[in-house]
Length: 248
Image 1 (cartoon, rainbow, N blue to C red):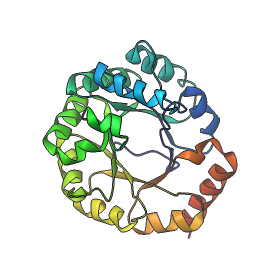
Image 2 (cartoon, rainbow, N blue to C red):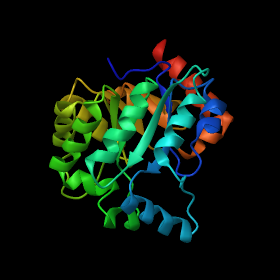
Image 3 (cartoon, helix red, strand yellow):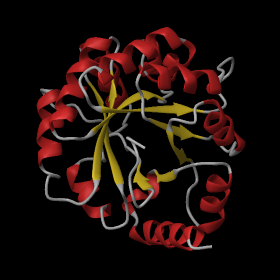
Image 4 (cartoon, rainbow, N blue to C red):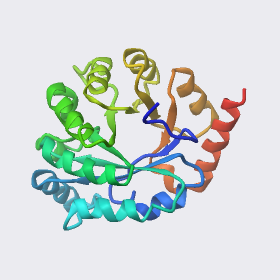
């Protein structure tokens, strides 16, 4: 698959923490690392500043596109497939970020996942799950640049048909669907069945062999580790679990 990576373990973006240094630290365990998330345009950056004001860590460089370029360049010698999780309120900034990613043969990941009120109020994050037409525009804009496109989504959002969303983003040019299963592992099987062309990465409480086995049994192509991605003990345990599952 165009969006695949090996080993099938990704480091999931952590706002304010997931930069090139973070990716380098975990690269010996992972096949991919998603930097960010990073806000690209003024409305999303204003929302990020509001989050910082209430003590949340966020990336707020003066020039987010230069930041993406610099961070990806810093990983040129690291054996990991890099990606950048991005937020914006219009397709133009997504296209611009994707073009930077394409130059580095990196993945651009459209954030349809964050649920912070400040981001949702400006139309970012999981609000895109309820606006499939706009999400398709973002994916298509990114795909036009030649970048590999991932979409980070959340299961269990009211009135959202996640399998239909999976089909929509696949049709628009996405190669990867990164699913925060929200304690609903069968959600993985639903999107795998709905859009078999997508490389599906399962996220949420990936910590050990039982969690790895469960996600892979539901059809996930890979798993990702979020908050514990800074803990080498957890990363080694998940890496060992993947080795064990793949050899049985």
